[in-house]
Each structure stands twice: as structure tokens, then as C-alpha cells.
Length: 243
View 1: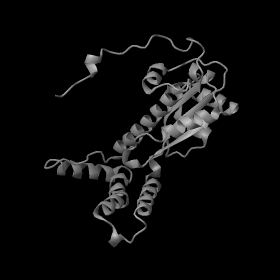
View 2: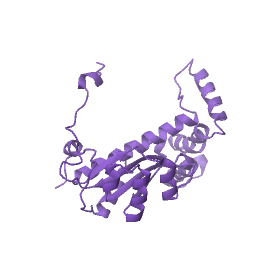
View 3: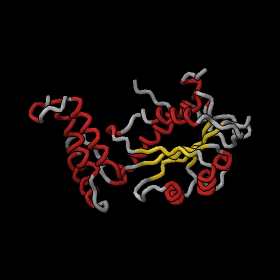
């Protein structure tokens, strides 16, 4: 029986030793389908998910992940990739979808709301995402902060800012995936310790892509891969209530 959200959150641990039992690849794929339902900035979905089940590829990935236990015992892996370089393609996809929803009317027939939504992807997104060697990004940053002296304004317009935005969205999707895996009794371990350049070469990814994280997947081998009881800093230190 599938666990509740709360039960899945409590069940999920970063498991570093898996047994030899193989999760059903189709069920893992379903969990990736849940991942892509995560919130994403401007619905640009600047991500890709690479599901690895091939043994030779897993061996290569283990080496690229510095030989850590979670990688060497994983029976599958999912690599979460940021594709900020695809912003033009994804913006066009959103604009085309909105036009279709509007009934493919001519622009002069759009409602104010429809015009705003389509212009968001055809005008605003290019303004925010377009850059050249970081120069335009810094120019936009200075301009937007100057305007921000007089009114609230979006300020994250540099290339480094947009990278952070893409990685935040990818991280939300990764959590969706891991909780979905936990809900059906499968285990994961998100790994940041990897040679990301080698990972991209193994997977044939373009240089412009970025590895958000590699997630080792499998079924826990008892408590061998859970090294301690879960503990957190006192909740009062991280919870702030503005009444």
C-alpha cells in the first residue's frame, strides 16, 4: 500500500548501502513523471532526468561519483540535469501552448489576460534570460537595481542568478521524485559528490548543461546504509512566525 505524504517523508532517508534487489524500472519512471509535476520558475521546466539501468553505465557513473557506497551499490541512478540553455525552446513551447488554449486567435482578438501571458514568454522571458558573456546580465542588474530604488522590481537577472533559478526548480523536482520513491518503498540517496564533467561525458550531455544532482536508487539493505538516527537542529531555530 502506498504511503501517505507524511509517512513517505519520514520513511525517506539518504540510503548509502542498497541490496541487490532491483526496483521495477517502470515504477521508477512513474516517480520521474511525478518529478516533472513540481513547481518550476515561469513553467520553463529547464530540466532533464536521465534514468540509468545499464550495468556498464552504472559502473562508469560510480567512478564519476568518486566510488562512494551509495553509487557502488545502486541498482539504478537518476541524474537531474539543469538545461538553462534551453530557455528559448521552452519559452516557445509555453507561448505556443497558450496560443492553442486561446483557440489560435489572431493577436488583435486576444483578451488582456491572454496578451499578457503570451507576451510574458515572447518578450519578458527573453529580456530576463538573454545574455552575452555576462555583460548584458550585469547591465540589466544595474538597471533593474536603479529602478528598484523607486519601486519593487525583480532583481535576479544576471547569468549566475538564472543558474540559481534553474537549480532551485530542479531541486524541487528531485524532491518530488525521492518522496514518490519512498511512498512505494524504494530508496534513494542524492549525491553532490561527483565529477560533473565526467558525468556529462558519460551521458553525452552538452557542455552548457549542468548536473544538479545524481540520485542513487535501490532498496535499502536493512539499516546498513542508514548510519544514524535522523536529527535536526531544534525546530525553534529555523521556524519564524510573523503574526
